[in-house]
Image (cartoon, rainbow, N blue to C red):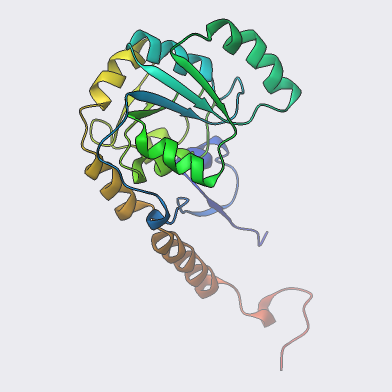
Length: 225
């Protein structure tokens, strides 16, 4: 077959090792569109769908155990999301929990930049996680569960804290608050820029073209010329 695929993470690639992967090229963001902020407000942020896979209830539990307010922003419109919200989120709502609703591009950047840390307690093998690099671009460290592409995105102990169980998250929040916002921003500027992504794709295309058979070698195709 002539189809070749480009993975957005090693995690995505390893989840389907039999597919014809040509390369791995990480997703990217335009870092300059994200506001870098050193001084943080006293809250943890969850930004994502209200869905069992994203597990915002674990964000509430972790922030509460760490003695922090938490703001939850994201979509809750599908039947599975609404059922999850009433089952797991509503019973946990208290004075320390703010349900923001859907955050547009401007609100998202403001919430990310002001957060002391972002919580990413995913319960599935997410192939990337753009919000992780968006947070770091704002100088906000990420506390995440070790699933999917998380270890490819966060420099553990430098731009965030990666933990193996939800029970480890409260202590990780306290550690994350000591991390340097500038290191978070630098990491994104070095690893996840649009220029780096474009160069990655270009390299794959050039390599693929260089090793592709000439048109006259393809069976069943008329000679060119």
